[in-house]
Image 1 (cartoon, rainbow, N blue to C red):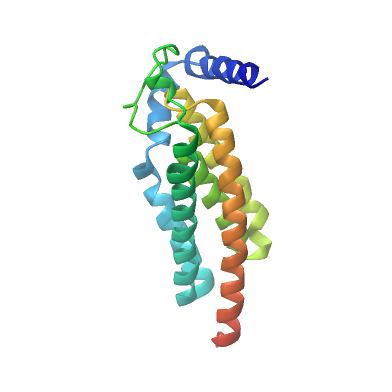
Image 2 (spheres, one colour):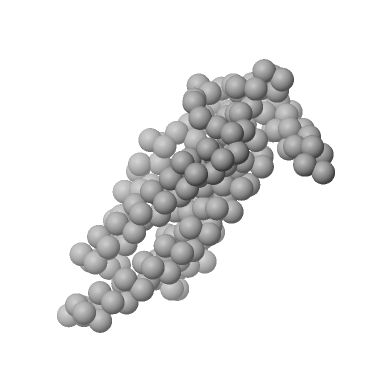
Length: 193
């Protein structure tokens, strides 16, 4: 059963990594998966948080940092070290098209996917209630594009990014609940004037 699932995962990898190959995605996917690409988006989020919550936004931004730290450490330090799955670009049997440096470490789960889905879930749940759906409609496709890019450039299998997305969503859900409780406490303790 496990061998059949691994075989399906590898076939899906080849469909994305080789079968979907084209010059446009060859340029865009390495850019999409680069964490520096998204710095302007993070600045925009910080701006909106400040606009909605004032100085209390610092608490939500700190919780966003905790969300990323938890996601990154759980995926990289605990899960990857338990499964020891080679990245497709490091697996000589996979013959992956590598568009970026392969990097060290293991493949399962994708920390990129976990981190971005955690952030997507967290942000979409801590924005003002009437904006949850609008922000989610942008944030989850954004995280999915980053996860897809990980497979396209040859550094992760589809199962890696799927498991990373699930992990991230769960972490983001927990930290969003904590962030909302923190904001409730701050609003009670320091009401706006």
